[in-house]
Length: 537
Image (cartoon, rainbow, N blue to C red):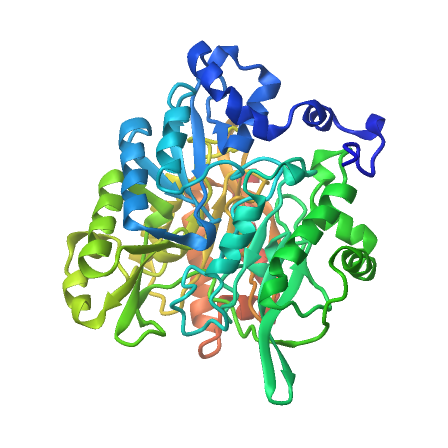
């Protein structure tokens, strides 16, 4: 393989030059050495390569602590794995576990001395950290209900595992221009957030007389961060047995032709924007061979990754129960009790959601009443209040070196305040982000908050910029950013104004997204302006 790919060596950024001589996957082999020599012995450049092992330097940057992400492909796991995760958090992570917007678990407070031990413990129960970060294919996300879902056209569990296994530790794809995110789902409500992934497979069907065939449509080039792009749908119909081949081909195009000069301009979305869809399809067919085109799109909405409540599975007399994990943060005791419930009332099946929540699966109908009476199920309730249950935040400056503001506690206080002051019968999604990198996915929120730092009365204070109207539903589009930033202690007042205006002026059963589309963002800017002006006067 030509390691300079389509770019001249002199055009590579410094990190690309480092990756030419040091494969990120090699870092795992050096962990035992660092375990003995300590954090200070790790070269500053090599600290970035630790991401390939699934670990990232935690804030403060030089204190010697790390966060670690654990892959849960498509969110499918079991109670034994949950107990191991809880035990690791107890023994090495100060009792904290966070769910992520890619169905993964995240530890904090790990040290270079404990990381090799943690990885060994995880591997014994078939859990991986390698490739959960770094310039490689990340955790394969998808339908957390795969295999039990009445709204799926294909059980995608084997497909997700096949693609995940192929890329796991694969040195042919361990040096991509940047991270690469794949979604595979056959749920008709777009539970895999197709349009914000580099590569996504969504449910489709080809009708050929009596020979109807279920397969997938293909989306490429989605992504958020400071320059968000919606993925574009290719004119392809992909059969289940072709998913891996197409995944390899798209990743190969990104590897060989993706940009490596500027890391801010290195995602697949930029290559697709320059090439155009027609050229991308042409280059893809050179790698895959002929693929069928067309197909009928079976996607009919977007549930934003939420599965609250008790619902029947496609298996008779079995149910899944969607639980609310406020802001995605769990204690050791929480996860241990969830695992116990999964065994006591079901078969040990647990699923993680893109909304940072949990699902207990395969619960017999006769066990539902007793399950709902459990203390942990009353706390992680299947029927959360509308704001606490639909608020998402990134890690924030508590642990992240890139974040400008604290997010977790702020978002929880905000949601609890809104639940106390406003009655709302329609879910309204609030996403809080601590920096421009969009781990909190504010662009797809009804109301998004992006943290920044500004001046107020001559002093530096945490502020938030607001955006409104994001959705991946039938009227797909990113949220529009409003002008101005407001201090964190005024955010709840602004949101109360927004939400009360929506309550009083909406049409019957009109969603917030449709409401914003109908009235326009200028109306909300007018509601925001007095708060901006009060900082000037």
